[in-house]
Image 1: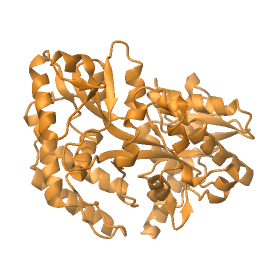
Image 2 (image 1 turned 45 degrees about the vertical axis):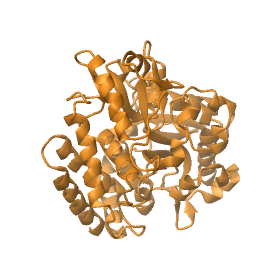
Image 3 (image 1 turned 90 degrees about the vertical axis):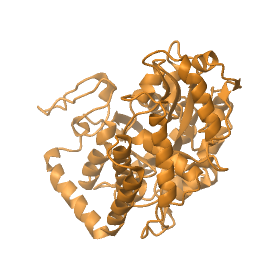
Length: 452
């Protein structure tokens, strides 16, 4: 496996020769298009502050370059953390740049493979095994000790997720889980009784009864449940349903055998599909978060990151709560996590590396309460018990999702496995395949992935 991954890195490196002066990789992107100097291309900046060509942004040689995948509401809070950190008098300040989410891992991998990546990066914990296997990030143990990190201040599952062969390769930032949002006005109009502004249900039958009450009270163009018909979100609901039904891990610990329970996977897929066929989801919703935000839905499943955006939306009277237990006896839900990484570089200055880890720990700990305002669940346990966090609306109510969530399989191939699951579930949602065929295709493709 590793020889193929290294070959892929060499291909990355060859493709990145166009960087020429690829040392220009960070900062100042939010201010609009900039010139890199010396006739270099202008930096292309999108409305949300992300940049399309991070390699062309002018780098301040006195600052650490930080590439992130945060945009929109998330990006604003991370910008504040960086600003607060820089104002704290660190040994090295940080220059932040947000990449387009869809391009992040490609551009990150290309730059790091050419040893011209940033000083600090972000990764989903689900993608970390791949980055470690490819040698794109370094172990942080020695630097973490000097930074004063106490690993007992992070949840054991998070620490395990960043540990490979006894070494830690990241600093955890958050857990972001799929949770339930309710439009309080629409539920009350339907006569739904709420407990502390939250929907109290114990199983799928009770949830269906609630949705049946809501359906006749809606106006044309409104929906009981806002859910995209393709992609990550229905996959995340399938994931939660599968594990609540008692599903087994997708692969064994060694990553050599598919252990997904085919029968349960089919049942879970059938349940999600029924939400459309029973008329609870309006067909063709393109952006479930925006649809709910604009007041067109009574309910939506969405990531914790939506809390901050919803909270700033005028006229949206909502509440957020953990993903409901609909099946079995556990509160399983989907989640992933963001972690700070230290990318491999051609010339790694020890002092700069220490400063980078110092920033990562500062952002996760002292910046944790600020980051929680975006809606994410901080990974640093002391932050979760701090007055700054508990005073935030909703957050402490769904913080337990960090411990009940089923994190992605710790597998170097998880990215490809996830893509295979989503693509085949998409055929079911689009009425192009039955649940049995979709799951059979998932298993077939997973087997091909782990054996290549």
